[in-house]
Length: 216
Ligand SMILES: Nc1ncnc2c1ncn2[C@@H]1O[C@H](COP(=O)(O)OP(=O)(O)OP(=O)(O)O)[C@@H](O)[C@H]1O
Ligand SMILES: NC(=O)c1ccc[n+]([C@@H]2O[C@H](CO)[C@@H](O)[C@H]2O)c1
Image (cartoon, rainbow, N blue to C red):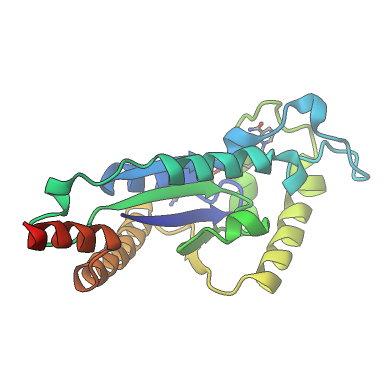
């Protein structure tokens, strides 16, 4: 039994949700976890020195609850049935978790669980254009993009780049199909590698089953 956890991180409106949903549909045995569902209620998001509610910082999110969801997924994935493990003596099912969000690599416990880290970027103008078409809950107050969202993006990104090195950067202005193909192919390649490795090293479970067969 194997798990494989992929981060689809990136700038606000970089296309994370679009890409992550397509991957979830295309990748067998995959689940999708979205960081945006862990925002604290508005009453708990403080107003900062910039005069805006601090939505674009890690403390706006209930990261403990998010980690509990990740751990619950790890613990609840179904066990492999013996008939699945045989006849090739490999436990070859890989369970995949796709995590999508704008602050995946700035929080150590979450950053640590990823096997593969992606980060979608788009330039300032495109980001502002896409963001202005969206309505959040609560909606962005006037001046929020330049006064809070963009400066916090720059700050968070700098911190991430200083701490985390193995991130694959994606150009979010590329066509969605191209982004999907690139990431999908890499996931399949890495999952295949895991399965091949499993075939060469029987798991403890397999060895126990072999012993039972030999004893018979
Ligand atoms: N590759 C792309 N090229 C052009 N537009 C895109 C692309 N991917 C997504 N979009 C558009 O950009 C907007 C934001 O996309 P999406 O919701 O996927 O981004 P996001 O990164 O999840 O945003 P956020 O998490 O900040 O809400 C949507 O209007 C979507 O249609
Ligand atoms: N989902 C929310 O509760 C919420 C509320 C206000 C603002 N946001 C924005 O979501 C983006 C991340 O996807 C951040 O840039 C937040 O500003 C989310």
